[in-house]
Image 1: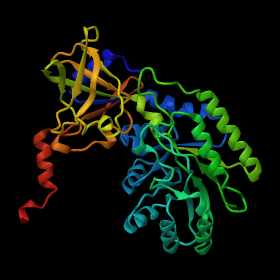
Image 2 (image 1 turned 180 degrees about the vertical axis):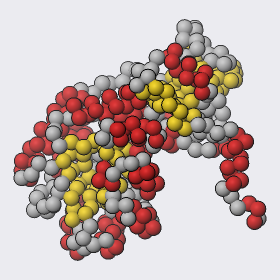
Image 3 (image 1 turned 30 degrees about the vertical axis):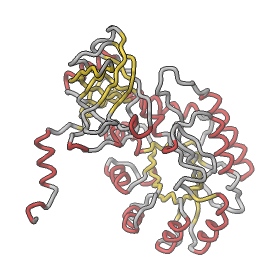
Image 4 (image 1 turned 135 degrees about the horizontal axis):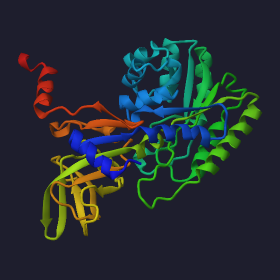
Length: 408
């Protein structure tokens, strides 16, 4: 983990708000999955939606990473960074026909999770290879908005519709080379992962899917956001996963590839958002620390009620007090933490919001026309500026340049 003294130095060098990513930890997490999961034909696909930072993507590429993508722009970004199309899986989600044609032209494999989408793809591209996403009927995750299976989700084809999938594939001579499921994000118990795996494997009989090359069990591996979070026995998890899949492959009669897509697990703990306190208020005893960032930079607390650990970098030994740590966006819900005990906060203090490497910058926006922060990647004792914050004046100029206001 990056020492607090270095985070302070980075903030002084690059200003705040500032995202810092620990590249060494990212690669350690990525490689560690290959050591953790006891199966020889494993492919770990990094989920780009977790963090599309080009520095992180290039670093992962150097270590032979595969990618899980969910939009045409993610596919094109990966290709422009030098990823081969064979190393990219595209999971379609309510895409337009135009987007379908765009991605299909790249040669990237489609992972399709709706019967109507499969029918449409088959009509346009008969004889193609495809992957099918099923709903494993196991819903899990740290919040209802990140649970991607079960009766109420928009994701995946119902397992009860497996025969409809096979009929569509036969009608258009589609070759189903992969099956996929994804249960949710931040899954707290390994038993839910095993259950969803078993449900998908129960569909994958060779007589129904004779051409399988891989089965993809999604992601959702838990990340510890709180200091006292329950620790998962990953060694047991990796061994059990290997046993389940080996047993299936033995019955199938062929050693298939096993895919996992743990985007958050790979990058979440690598990230730090450093912010500066610029305003202090005492509202009838309730202390409010106002900062130069907001939910447009890190929306997880507002969107999911998520906890992110916060530390006072510049006054770590101050007397503990209870604060609301708030942002600079004109919305009442713009708080990173409410009633959080922290060492005394003074105007000018630097705070670091930890475990900010996944679904933080990538979910950012220009709401209130406030620029996104600078991002730096630290690895091998190098400090690389990947994304530079633009000034308020340049942001306004970009808005005007991209518009057609003169014709109004």
